[in-house]
Amino acid sequence: MKLNVYCDKLEDLKCDAVVVFVEKDRVALRGLEAEVNKMVDNKVGEMLESKEFESKPDQFMYFHTFDKIKNIPRVALVGYSLEDDITLNSLRSSAAKVAKSLRNVGMKKIAMIMPNVRAWFMPDSARVIVEGALMGLYRFDKYVEKKYTKKLEEIVLVGEGKDRRTLEKAILLGEMEASGVMLARDVANEPGNVLTPKHFAGIAKRMMQKVKVGCNVLDEGDIKKEGLGLLYGVGKGSENPPQMVVMNYNAGKKYPTVAVVGKGITFDSGGVDLKVGTAAGPMFFNMKRDMAGAAAVLGMMYVVGQIKPKINIIGVLPLAENMPDGRSYKPGDILVSYSGKSVEIFQTDAEGRLVMADAMSYVQENYAVDYLLDVATLTGSAVLTCGPKMMGLFGNDSRLLERIKKAGVVAGEETMDFPLYDGYRQRIKSHFADIKNFSYKPPYMIASALFLREFVKEGTKWAHLDIASMVSSSGEGTYLTRGATGAGVRLLSHLVLGMGK
Ligand code: BES
Ligand code: MG
Ligand code: ZN
Image 1 (cartoon, rainbow, N blue to C red):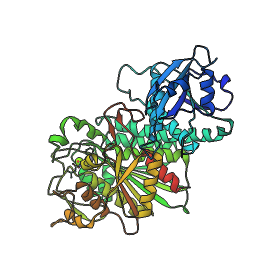
Image 2 (cartoon, rainbow, N blue to C red):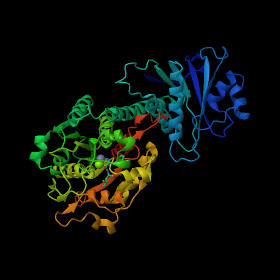
Image 3 (cartoon, rainbow, N blue to C red):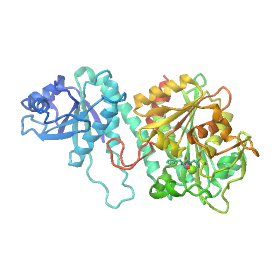
Image 4 (cartoon, rainbow, N blue to C red):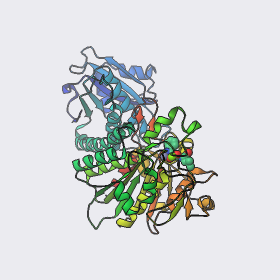
């Protein structure tokens, strides 16, 4: 699909439909919106005034112009509201809604009049419209015989003459960011039988080659040799051996280095502590998406590789399948981590923190890391506490946390603060090893973050994001389509790009 800018006379614009975004409770039409309205004899204005069209969020309609506008046979209206939201997600949503709806009735080329959004600048609103439309148009039809045939071919952003450069830039940024989200969705939508750790590593290699970012893969032998005992232990029970991907984007020595680690459990059965009851149940298949953290990091690296910011970024993906087997690690086992700390296994289903811990130690040991971020579908309690619109946030540096929160608002992926409460540290004490991986007492989410903190080196500024609540969508939605959402890519991209300015 092509994206273009149009800043000339409306009379000369040719398309299947022109879209007007209308904010809730707004009646006055300005600028180009007013021009469109004039061309259809004030019909849009009348519909707004009479409340025939109320401009509720995602409310959508279109009508034919019966040659009132020479080259534009249809006008579409879509509502949005920023009332209850500090992000521009309503605009992302309406852009997705309108693009998808018009595609589904067979339109090929649509034009969107850029709205004037209060308190936000045009570069942001235009960018989120691009993002929203591209994310909403996403489909995963690789495995169905009847592929989707309806395809939108072009979206034109329409602005005033002075907006041209701004809109061109918004398209570039929006497209790059969306490409990272799509990549993350593509891998997270792959079923577990296809997306083994090895297959995932292959995709990472290929995609990093495309954007010229270094990518090195450690196989099971390397993992054992290097002493990544936790990752090795978790992966041991599977026919599909663990891998670890290290992606390295290098901007130069004078810039700081951010390491981002993503949990990549390609299927989480729970292991010997096989998931039962509600943890399994009808949603068990979603555990194929227990690699969504790794997918988010891959997506972010893909964005970074295209934008090339002035900051060094290392993406690390510990990949493994957590399965019950004669070779599996077991409750009571004691594993020695890469950092040298020994870990007593109390629960084989608390595998995420194990693979994350080793990858975090590895990157801090082998690179001069200033900032360490980790992204993981770590706990079921994050789903209950934060879901489905927020992710859990922990960290040891208030300035970094502030940055993450701000990036979350701009990216439309908001965070919920949690404390690294020392009073619960005893939860992960072990009598026979340095620590244990699970406590029978809640709060589980805090215990999991305290566990990870044990593997953060003194002086490293660190933040942990628990995205378990955000990675799957059970319905089609608007910009979050059914299945994998690509959660985390937008926040991470904005964060690291902001740090590299
Ligand atoms: N992958 C799960 C967490 C999860 C649950 C992600 C639901 C997405 C949706 C993780 O490995 C896990 O099993 N966590 C357990 C840990 C517990 C045994 C300490 C949990 O949170 O229930
Ligand atoms: Mg688990
Ligand atoms: Zn898991």
